Amino acid sequence: MKKYPNKLAQVRSGLNVQLYNKDQPPLTQEALASKCEVTRQTIAAIENEMQMPSYPLALRIYMLLTKYKASVGYTLDFKLQELFPIPPLKRDLIKSAEIAHPETI
Image (cartoon, rainbow, N blue to C red; front, top):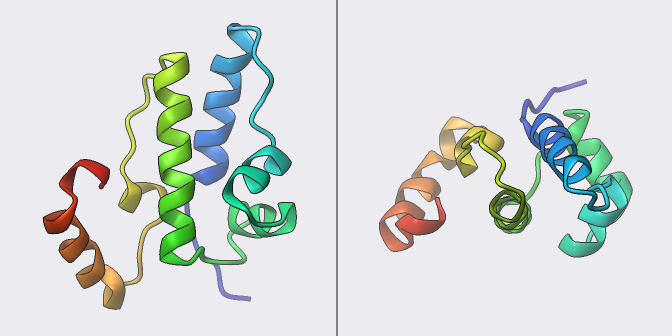
């Protein structure tokens, strides 16, 4: 089976440690899925490197994690393309998105 490496589980785990230290509820797969309007199984498949998120879903996940990061003072810095490494053919989409919206990438 093809693997789609990403850092979603690692980043979510780090955020959960920070949330725990601030007595806030964890960001579970189910909570992340609900906020991104997908199923928990979709998030699990992405974290287990069995599925690559669509670009809109990857952006929604990234924006949500960025908001959580800011709210808890998470120190690990990550960018969209580090969270979800994009196959070479789609890198042109990232370049055009960086030009259009550099603050989100």
